[in-house]
Length: 294
Image (cartoon, rainbow, N blue to C red; front, side, top):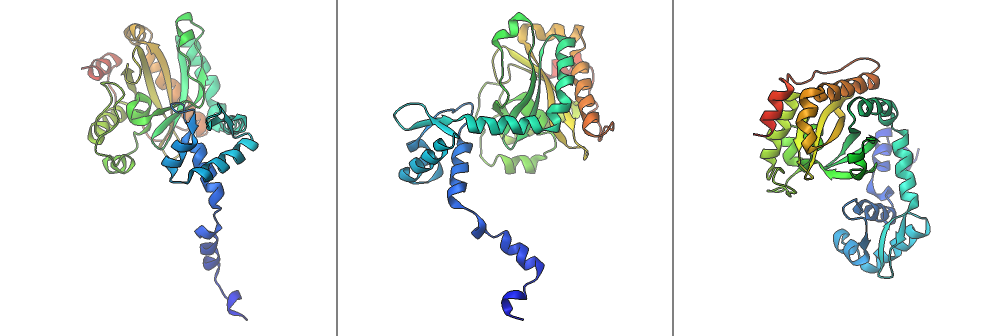
């Protein structure tokens, strides 16, 4: 038997996982697509070249290829681009295939109807939170407060993120955020990872979070975790409240209980009727509201 045919199965698997099997041009194209975001929907050749460390001529050719297949489109004659219809279609098809959104949509629809407030489901993608389902309030004041599916927010600066990070300990948070200081968006944004960990830990113990103008002035949220079969946080259910309505909603309509109940329902649906793990031993909604805003 020749030496070429005497390799073990593990050797073959190792070879298949080798970087030689990667396609550099494809990797570069995918890296370009991941640079676009809600905060930066339009990017130019020079900026992409700088960020990715790729020559401008190479970026230009990659963008031309992506444009030909509909994944980016030109916004002007100055080599600026934004995601195209093909990228949007892939994203929507992915979201539509998620069991989470299929099972959760009727639940947040009911939460919206019970409370009058817009309800969402979010998941975490590394350092961002992503809106994957929504039930828009029919009330007039909320007509100007609309968040699109696929919108991303920084996890460290949003109440949703503080809940979604609830399974991470201090070391894991430091690995996710190796920088010395965190980018601040409002006065409520934690400036350090240690400050972020304190918020995450408090919300994990409480079993929910209440945020008042934590990321956007005048907007408050009540957020509760959804868990997978292992007991880890898979998503959150949240309601959006205009800040002047927050206190009455909490103390007169049992809003926290309704959000937590909806999150528990979705957890059960994801796990065949079983609720893995346990919620934090929170105290009353009034007490937690006061603590959150001290």
